[in-house]
Length: 168
Image 1: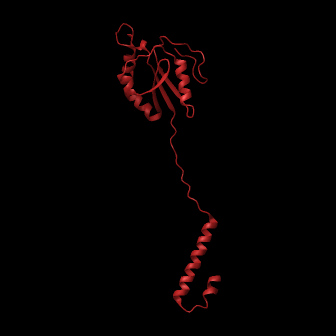
Image 2 (image 1 turned 135 degrees about the horizontal axis):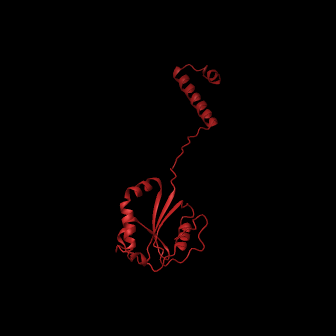
Image 3 (image 1 turned 180 degrees about the horizontal axis):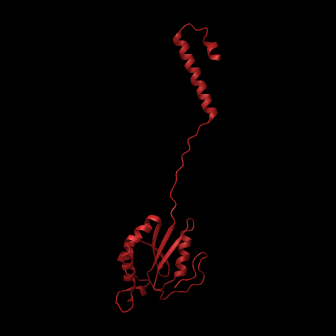
Protein backbone atom coordinates (compact mmCIF):
# COMPACT_ATOMS: atom_id res chain seq x y z
CA UNK A 1 0.00 0.00 0.00
CA UNK A 2 2.86 2.40 0.88
CA UNK A 3 4.52 1.59 -2.42
CA UNK A 4 1.42 2.36 -4.39
CA UNK A 5 0.89 5.66 -2.54
CA UNK A 6 4.51 6.77 -2.99
CA UNK A 7 4.66 6.06 -6.74
CA UNK A 8 1.23 7.51 -7.48
CA UNK A 9 2.61 10.98 -8.20
CA UNK A 10 5.31 9.75 -10.61
CA UNK A 11 4.70 10.19 -14.33
CA UNK A 12 7.30 7.81 -15.80
CA UNK A 13 6.41 4.11 -15.94
CA UNK A 14 10.11 3.28 -15.85
CA UNK A 15 10.58 5.11 -12.53
CA UNK A 16 7.41 3.55 -11.11
CA UNK A 17 8.64 0.04 -11.96
CA UNK A 18 12.18 0.67 -10.61
CA UNK A 19 10.89 2.06 -7.30
CA UNK A 20 8.33 -0.75 -7.06
CA UNK A 21 11.05 -3.34 -7.63
CA UNK A 22 13.31 -1.69 -5.01
CA UNK A 23 10.45 -1.71 -2.48
CA UNK A 24 9.73 -5.35 -3.30
CA UNK A 25 13.42 -6.29 -2.95
CA UNK A 26 13.62 -4.45 0.41
CA UNK A 27 10.47 -6.14 1.65
CA UNK A 28 11.76 -9.55 0.53
CA UNK A 29 15.13 -8.98 2.25
CA UNK A 30 13.47 -7.93 5.52
CA UNK A 31 11.14 -10.90 5.35
CA UNK A 32 14.08 -13.21 4.69
CA UNK A 33 15.95 -11.78 7.68
CA UNK A 34 12.91 -12.20 9.92
CA UNK A 35 12.38 -15.81 8.88
CA UNK A 36 16.09 -16.55 9.51
CA UNK A 37 16.41 -19.53 7.18
CA UNK A 38 19.24 -21.95 7.76
CA UNK A 39 20.63 -24.85 5.84
CA UNK A 40 21.28 -27.81 8.08
CA UNK A 41 23.82 -30.26 6.76
CA UNK A 42 24.31 -33.45 8.69
CA UNK A 43 27.23 -35.73 8.12
CA UNK A 44 26.93 -39.30 9.22
CA UNK A 45 29.92 -41.52 9.74
CA UNK A 46 29.41 -45.20 10.03
CA UNK A 47 30.53 -46.27 13.45
CA UNK A 48 32.32 -49.56 13.27
CA UNK A 49 33.67 -51.31 16.32
CA UNK A 50 37.43 -51.43 16.78
CA UNK A 51 39.23 -54.77 16.78
CA UNK A 52 42.84 -55.09 17.89
CA UNK A 53 44.88 -58.13 16.88
CA UNK A 54 47.83 -58.62 19.23
CA UNK A 55 50.58 -61.03 18.18
CA UNK A 56 53.28 -62.20 20.54
CA UNK A 57 56.67 -60.99 19.34
CA UNK A 58 58.81 -62.65 22.02
CA UNK A 59 61.71 -64.90 21.10
CA UNK A 60 59.82 -68.01 22.25
CA UNK A 61 57.60 -67.67 19.18
CA UNK A 62 60.62 -68.83 17.11
CA UNK A 63 60.59 -72.22 18.86
CA UNK A 64 59.03 -75.20 17.08
CA UNK A 65 55.36 -75.96 17.55
CA UNK A 66 55.04 -79.60 18.63
CA UNK A 67 56.81 -82.28 16.62
CA UNK A 68 56.04 -80.70 13.23
CA UNK A 69 59.06 -78.43 13.24
CA UNK A 70 57.31 -75.23 12.14
CA UNK A 71 57.88 -72.29 14.45
CA UNK A 72 55.03 -70.90 16.52
CA UNK A 73 55.10 -67.61 14.63
CA UNK A 74 54.91 -69.55 11.36
CA UNK A 75 51.76 -71.27 12.64
CA UNK A 76 50.24 -67.84 13.34
CA UNK A 77 51.28 -66.62 9.87
CA UNK A 78 49.82 -69.74 8.26
CA UNK A 79 46.59 -69.27 10.18
CA UNK A 80 46.28 -65.63 9.13
CA UNK A 81 47.13 -66.45 5.50
CA UNK A 82 44.77 -69.41 5.23
CA UNK A 83 41.95 -67.34 6.73
CA UNK A 84 42.56 -64.24 4.63
CA UNK A 85 38.93 -64.20 3.41
CA UNK A 86 37.74 -64.19 7.01
CA UNK A 87 40.19 -61.38 7.86
CA UNK A 88 38.87 -59.40 4.87
CA UNK A 89 35.32 -59.81 6.17
CA UNK A 90 36.49 -58.58 9.57
CA UNK A 91 38.16 -55.55 7.95
CA UNK A 92 34.79 -54.60 6.40
CA UNK A 93 32.96 -54.80 9.72
CA UNK A 94 35.65 -53.48 12.10
CA UNK A 95 38.38 -50.90 12.28
CA UNK A 96 41.22 -53.42 12.39
CA UNK A 97 44.54 -52.61 14.09
CA UNK A 98 47.54 -54.96 14.27
CA UNK A 99 49.98 -54.88 17.18
CA UNK A 100 52.95 -56.93 18.22
CA UNK A 101 53.89 -57.24 21.86
CA UNK A 102 56.58 -58.67 24.04
CA UNK A 103 57.47 -56.65 27.12
CA UNK A 104 55.60 -53.68 25.56
CA UNK A 105 53.10 -53.00 22.79
CA UNK A 106 54.11 -51.94 19.25
CA UNK A 107 51.89 -50.78 16.39
CA UNK A 108 52.34 -53.20 13.53
CA UNK A 109 50.94 -54.33 10.20
CA UNK A 110 50.07 -57.57 8.48
CA UNK A 111 53.19 -57.29 6.29
CA UNK A 112 55.46 -56.66 9.28
CA UNK A 113 54.12 -59.76 11.02
CA UNK A 114 54.72 -61.87 7.92
CA UNK A 115 58.24 -60.58 7.25
CA UNK A 116 59.84 -60.04 10.64
CA UNK A 117 61.02 -62.71 13.06
CA UNK A 118 60.16 -62.25 16.73
CA UNK A 119 62.99 -61.03 18.91
CA UNK A 120 61.50 -59.76 22.16
CA UNK A 121 62.78 -60.99 25.51
CA UNK A 122 59.62 -61.57 27.57
CA UNK A 123 55.88 -61.78 27.03
CA UNK A 124 53.83 -59.37 29.12
CA UNK A 125 50.23 -59.64 28.04
CA UNK A 126 48.86 -57.55 30.91
CA UNK A 127 51.21 -54.62 30.27
CA UNK A 128 50.41 -54.78 26.55
CA UNK A 129 46.67 -54.69 27.19
CA UNK A 130 47.12 -51.74 29.56
CA UNK A 131 49.15 -49.91 26.90
CA UNK A 132 46.46 -50.71 24.32
CA UNK A 133 43.74 -49.30 26.58
CA UNK A 134 45.85 -46.18 27.28
CA UNK A 135 46.64 -45.64 23.58
CA UNK A 136 43.02 -46.03 22.54
CA UNK A 137 41.67 -44.00 25.50
CA UNK A 138 39.71 -41.38 23.51
CA UNK A 139 38.28 -44.15 21.36
CA UNK A 140 37.43 -47.60 22.51
CA UNK A 141 38.80 -51.02 21.71
CA UNK A 142 35.75 -53.21 21.39
CA UNK A 143 37.45 -56.56 20.84
CA UNK A 144 40.92 -58.02 21.11
CA UNK A 145 42.32 -61.18 19.56
CA UNK A 146 45.61 -62.35 21.07
CA UNK A 147 47.99 -64.82 19.44
CA UNK A 148 50.58 -65.97 21.95
CA UNK A 149 52.36 -69.12 23.02
CA UNK A 150 52.07 -68.05 26.64
CA UNK A 151 55.72 -68.81 27.36
CA UNK A 152 57.59 -66.42 29.67
CA UNK A 153 54.36 -64.58 30.46
CA UNK A 154 54.76 -62.06 33.29
CA UNK A 155 51.41 -62.99 34.86
CA UNK A 156 47.83 -61.84 34.74
CA UNK A 157 47.54 -59.58 37.78
CA UNK A 158 46.06 -56.16 37.15
CA UNK A 159 44.10 -56.85 33.99
CA UNK A 160 42.08 -53.72 33.08
CA UNK A 161 38.41 -53.85 33.92
CA UNK A 162 36.24 -55.11 31.09
CA UNK A 163 38.78 -57.62 29.79
CA UNK A 164 38.39 -61.32 30.29
CA UNK A 165 40.35 -62.91 33.12
CA UNK A 166 40.96 -66.04 31.05
CA UNK A 167 44.32 -65.09 29.58
CA UNK A 168 46.48 -68.11 28.78
